[in-house]
Image (tube, rainbow, N blue to C red; front, side, top):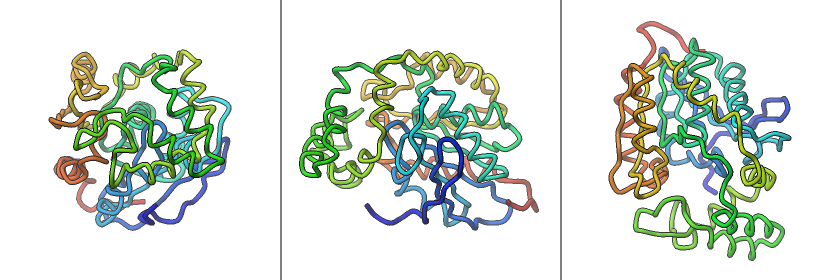
Length: 293
């Protein structure tokens, strides 16, 4: 895996949270906090983090049960949200623009609702605002089979290669084995090797009642928000009803759809993703003369 993130640090607690902090940043600019999606880890921002860190202080962290963070007893949505708020308050400790993908986008909404004084802006990449209930066993069977092979590197790599993509790749790829580059199976094994299998089993077995809190989080957003999403026919989780729910509740909202993409934009199309971000980041910059944390 490319070494593009700073050295991992640890926020103590239950569970412990691994985070990455670029430090620095231009005085007066809010920090940027990156929140990854389910089954991913902070390295999923490696083609975005370094570029943002040339101007902003950037903090990314591994969600509970993912990457270097600790495994947990609960994988409820509200538990993931609580971890995000803890990182914002205890690590960032100041104004931030939150950029969240999928599950991370929902956690960013929770931060904006519960700690509005710290959130200057939100970037929500394909947020599944109608948070799904139980995952489908047959759909997740290849992932479960792969996680059962982590003790045998070759078998693990073969199994990861068979996992279907959540949405078609940039050239129509359907599995990680067909991918090359950023999401090639050889790289994705580094994402999944530390994923807690209990997280997958939780999503397969549990109707997450805390998912009902999402509407309340959306209603509590007072900061400007940019939504970046793909096409629903290609796997985007943000359907028309979800987009309307966001538009109805968030006063300052911009939605940008990327034709030809599905659920993942920052990984498949990092350059257009960053180009969409920059005008928004300039607009929500801290007041003239303010100093960062």
